[in-house]
Amino acid sequence: MLDIAGRLTGAALALALLAGAAPVLAQEQAPFNMAQAKPGAEPSAEQMKLANELLIANGEASSFDAIIPNVIEQAAASFVQANPDLIRDLREVAKQLVPQYEGRRSEVVQILARTYAAQFSAAELQELLVFYRSPVGRKLVEKRQELLDAGLRGIQAWSAGFSREMEAKVREEMKKRGFTI
Image (cartoon, rainbow, N blue to C red; front, side, top):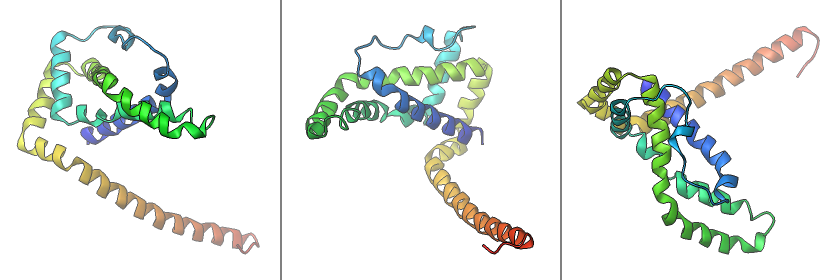
């Protein structure tokens, strides 16, 4: 369960980055400085090393593989509304920029690694690594998307049923008040 929550947190982080990064990316800026990430006690080098290993072992590092192309495409698309005739050129420019900035994905991974390193001791990170390197941990990583997809389908089905149940309850309560809906 900790992993699913972490995965969802990673997804939320990716969405937040995508939402806010387009205007920033449109400007030439220096790479992210890790000192900007979080004030306070710095995680040790060992914690950072273990956190990076954990992100590889649990598959979260690869969950950001598409972030650079997505942010660049979003930045280019932000100009389409004002210049719809330029859509083809904007797409070409976006594709051209991706290889130049692909290396910056590591900045996102380092932000996440720092987050883990700040929350877990070196010993705890080592325990997590032991789990994710175990057969059951590897199985969890391999089946993660399948599990999330099946879980979401189940939640959607439950939600639809619950919604119908609540509609009937609202009708029933409104009928008690003299309204037929």
